[in-house]
Image 1 (cartoon, rainbow, N blue to C red):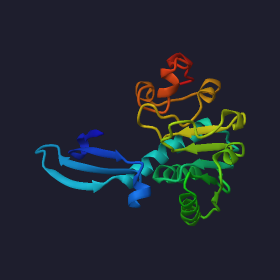
Image 2: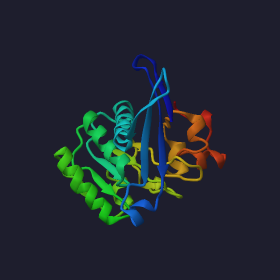
Image 3: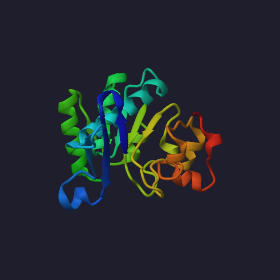
Length: 219
């Protein structure tokens, strides 16, 4: 992910890797990120920085913007599926734009769910409750934040109530799918870049099946 900031006189590149075995085998986050920063005039490397925290904040900011303009203004209950770094940023963003009370969290690892609940409760000053299944969360929330690089949808379309807002940000490779095709088809579906999400993002499976296309997007 390269970038150039003329007024600052710097250029850089962020390198992101993903390994789903990290949390199980190495006690590390699934996603690792680093930024190399260079002087734009000379090309001299001037910094090598860990980028996991800034990545978390960026994802949280995007989630907050989406929820601010697309979720109901009276939304109070947030559900979190996946308990990694990305959804820490998402919840931090959501509490900035909505009066969130008692968020619910589920991860395939009960230990990760409980760790997330404890950490985010302390950080945000609100109680975050771990639940046993994703389905118990889906039908209870106003806003659902998902960051799960899953091979199959992590929720059932039938469990989602009308008017719920879904932030899905966990897929960055083709063949993965967080939310059901049926959910995409009956929703006002908004993406940031169709070319990316239709090939390697969260809608790649839905688009490749022929059940959804650019014409079906809300924006």
